[in-house]
Amino acid sequence: MEKIKMTTPLVEMDGDEMTRVIWKTLKDELILPYVDLKVEYYDLGLTHRDATNDQITIEAANANKRLGVGVKCATITPNKQRMDEYKLHEMWKSPNGTIRSILDGTVFRTPIIIDSIKPVVKNWKKPITIARHAYGDVYKGVEIVTEEPGVAKLVFTGESGKVTEVEVQKFKGNGVLQAMHNTEKSITSFAHSCFRYAITTKQDLWFSTKDTISKKYDGRFKAIFEEVYKEYEEEFKKLGITYFYTLIDDAVARVIRSEGGYIWACKNYDGDVMSDMVSTAFGSLAMMTSVLCSPDGNFEYEAAHGTVTRHYYKYLNGEETSTNPMAMIFAWSGALRKRGEKDNLPELMRYADCLEKACFATLNDGIMTKDLVNLVEGAEVKSVNTNTFIAEIRVRLEKMLNCKCGCCC
Ligand code: NAP
Ligand code: MG
Image (cartoon, rainbow, N blue to C red; front, side, top):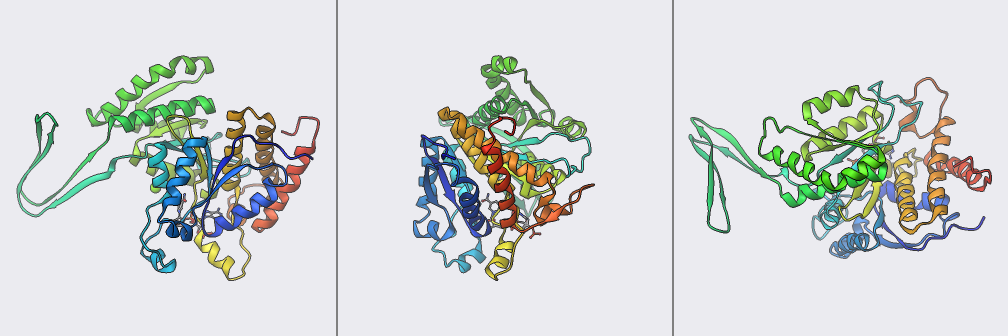
């Protein structure tokens, strides 16, 4: 079979630990034999980030902005223990944070679902994608613990000199205080990313806040979304999809009773908590994909999980691991499909479809990694190691790619 051609390179960001090991295997086994892969490669492994004073992360993010599509392996966000382990010069920032601030995007997380793994919520039939606003609110909050009675005020001094002041509370005893913020620019970007992603994936968009209580703060979020929606309304109607705003309490109840198949846009804190709930209820973090979409149409694909450190230490000890590569494979298929769409390469898009179908076929044949085995209901399954799992996917992928009937994928 002749290899599938690409025209524009993908930005490939390599990473750390177990995911770095699997990254290479899955490229060697599932991609390079079939695709004439064009990439701009950036090594975001912690050692290389340290050696370049983290410049490599900035270069990778800028390349993603320039070329439009990137795929990223999981990376270590250093803490004190990692400083010692890797003898780092500095406690470098989270690469995802750096990339996000350069691309200015929203992260969309979607579970990969299969028939034999039933979600905890039994009526969920289709994936629920969480779009989490990734700037501000409590994550950029400032706080005070007071140790005497007194008055707390919120003061804004405009550049014009105009002062706006509101009393927060007259404290009779000790208390706690917090101030947080967001910006119109960031909320507007968030809204654009959400509407665009809904159009790209042809799914309804839900958005929820607590604007009944937070009339000004959450009220602005609601109003900005309504304003931005006007730009997309016609396209939504054409595609037969809807934009739906509701109170967060109502959204939670509706989500639980729904059958899935939509995007749920959440403010930063809601998205943090709800994405953990949704991924757990769907089964496994190893089956969750993640894509960062910028308001100007750039995409960065990755798995939602981390570098799977515990498995890596086993691997270093020469032990066999059964780490699940599904979300990493879907990061590649998502990125290649998007490259195919942008460059009008139907063969590349077909390859991405086949790759995903080959993964599903393998799982549906009962061949899976250890993390999934205990989640399966009512089917015979066999637990295999990562390499065997990838080899089984390859057998099925090859069959599909060689099939001329067009029915396989
Ligand atoms: P993690 O790598 O996601 O792993 C947590 C646990 O979840 C694993 O120990 C494993 O459970 C299970 N798991 C996750 N992915 C799996 C997979 N593909 N197959 C099978 N099991 C899987 O999170 P962590 O241990 O908290 O973080 C490790 C490192 O990753 C940290 O240095 C962190 O900074 C980094 N991180 C990076 C990203 C990113 O780059 N996007 C995201 C999160 C964390 P068992 O051990 O029970 O098998
Ligand atoms: Mg969380």
